[in-house]
Length: 127
Image 1 (tube, rainbow, N blue to C red):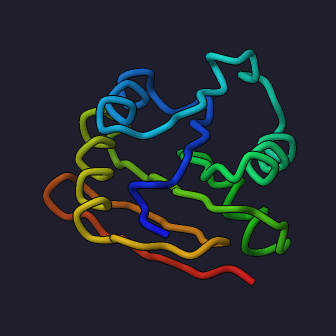
Image 2 (cartoon, rainbow, N blue to C red; image 1 turned 30 degrees about the vertical axis):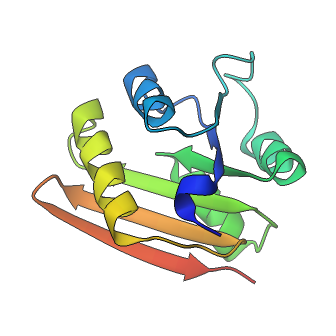
């Protein structure tokens, strides 16, 4: 499946400017803030993402823990690890990701980390 065709679920920790940018890029984004799920548990968000086949976009390491170590079923997770926490840096990371990874196969986890000048991407297929 094309990464650009994925439906997204934006975790509460994703800056509203980043969510707006994703929408401007043409993504179908369900933001937890927009639908009153700002305090939802990670497990509930995973259940929603599975039911709606949405990829969770987050800064929260807990999703990686749930998906990898506990082998919790997920549709997909994009974990953004920004050094600065600046929304602009997150957008640079996402831009680099979209330019570098064309397709993904659920279930998957993508980790994006580093600075705007040096973005490191790891795509991991999950069992």
